[in-house]
Image (tube, rainbow, N blue to C red):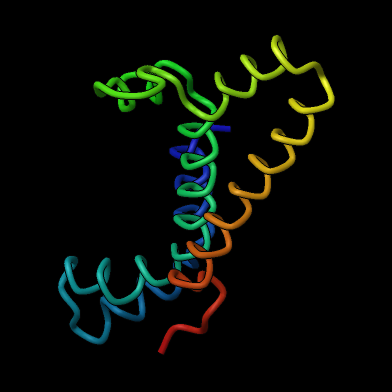
Length: 123
């Protein structure tokens, strides 16, 4: 599922009554979006960002372009290095490194969720 679809689903979940109440209270369209809609989209935006993080982490062309700097293992990323280790050391070492790679993704996601706090109540 694309992040755009996730955000669209979040927009459709915003109750019409909330937007109408903001209009009745005299809020401009910008104020209604910024103070009513956007805070209610927080969980959808968090899910969309997590999907994007996972997609970018697994997108080899993007990662290869980002990692093409001179030096040791030029053009290698963790995913291609695991493939190289599988060829040289066998599937056992590659499996262990894949688990470490997965744990690395989980740590990044945990840090993101602790910073964003998508389930935090909106004031």
